[in-house]
Length: 509
Ligand code: NG6
Ligand code: CA
Figure 1: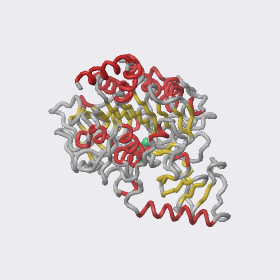
Figure 2: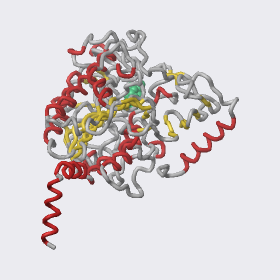
Figure 3: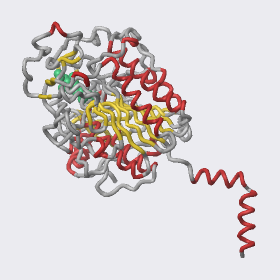
Figure 4: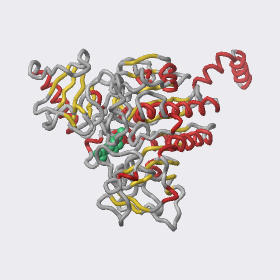
């Protein structure tokens, strides 16, 4: 008996090439996962999606080595709900209070619920969030001078280096794990969103102090010569400089990668670029003909390049799944006079789509989405319909995690599409802006949402209408021909599906 066993193992060894091949397959290490989440980058803003007024060689690198999606969506046409959905796998519109948050909002994700980072931790990943957060911190009336929690660490991130809300909202400081970085205890931070604090200068009273003027809103606290939304005082030693923010995020992301080079890691890397205020580092000044908005795209591309280079340097590229997407569609004038409108030229931030950030037209949520993983993904272009809410289930499938019944209620397992192994995506998806839209097959229904057609300040074509609108997006990508009156049956079919999605607490099969 013993002899036979020994001989068997000898035979196995003898056919070593086959044996080691299958052993390697079985024990293929989990890929590292890097999700780069840009802010307000539109479908048409990158060279790999057709832009010619800006070069994006590093983003193009991801596109060339991976899958470039043409019908991928953020869950919503603004930031907070999209990020909520990404991390929870739940449509944000189910939960009141998940709209664009002020900078002093409490954490809106319940720490008790399953989250994307916690799911990946279950698979043995080290997890990190870098950059824009905008999901609230603390549990109300946060004192920024003490321990800041709950926050990302309570949601399953092992570590974090954050901009708490947005670049244009106070407090303008970084938070590392649970503390404001470089805070002098003798100069405490105060934040107020309801009224000015003391007689500090504001953008409204003191426009002469500003290096960039607001075009609408953004006339409160002045930090680094830029007036913001909300009031703050104190924390002078902790205030960020907009011009070095991209570098700070790169440093934090790169050092997390370095520290975890020998174990699987998940890096959620959320840039400030290309949100307002657009103050890229001066070395990107004039990189494009489009002024700061274009130059911010150049800085974004640099950022992406730094992360890719770090993976290369550490020999991690081959087994790292790198994804890139945006939290909502593009906006040109989002509140500062930064020449974005004047210098836009022939550039079309939303590509062929109508609308942009804030809009129910495709420009609101159809965003760039790239996925590369040299060890597994074959390069290509995919028209599969996918949503960022699907990452939760798809990455659970990838890492062999079973979802609990209460996890990720709206997240579909789209792993084969994500990896480019299937061109079939979702059958339908809900898009969220002012109202809800239903995309299914060749058609899209925008539910009735009376109101002004254009958001005056941002010049956004909102997709408003007193009645439901129906577009055949497969051939009318610019949503120009409303077919609702001609096709009442289609309107009814999509309205019913949308009603069902709205009412059922879980759309995940
Ligand atoms: C709007 C801001 C806009 C931007 C947006 C949030 C004004 C007038 N406009 O209210 O500048 O900050 O909120 O953008 O204040 S998001 O990408 O974070 O959703
Ligand atoms: Ca955004």
